[in-house]
Length: 241
Image (cartoon, rainbow, N blue to C red):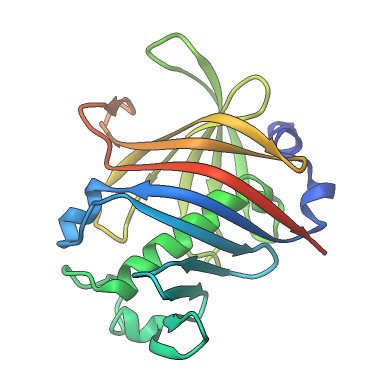
């Protein structure tokens, strides 16, 4: 079964079940942020991800001396000594609707980075959680001849993510090579082909350390004129239960 194989390839469910949190040192930049009038510049962040609940802490954010926290209920910015500077519930953040405003502020970027990093770090482990639905969907051949196995995933409503239905591509070893989604937070036009490579083992857990997102054409092929998001993982520390 493809799902069992890919979870095993990334460390195995038994090992992931023993994880409390994960700390990553990473760099990220994104031209897509310019569509919301925010800087696409490179950001170096330490990201703390809770494995058992929806929580992601970014520091420094949005600047040195501050950190941002994303959860399933709110986003907040606080000083490094714990003083809350700005906080909004997700209902307030979305102003009672299902879309963020066109022009983003720091809390909007925090929401986007927070849910995106949390999703990426837990993939594919959380596909085994309640209410996730997966279906093997044949194979895909890249233009360079690589053959990947497709897994269609329906995300449950309690998981903040890019969109409810996404497609993941894995090589013969079970490693994640690509994921397709629509980043609905930006709009229906942001169909992404998100590539992953340079996998590394950190304390028995395997992560792709290079990521780059391209526009996805109706054919499913990426438009590789330029990347819309790009990320590099420099180090991962695992905190066990």
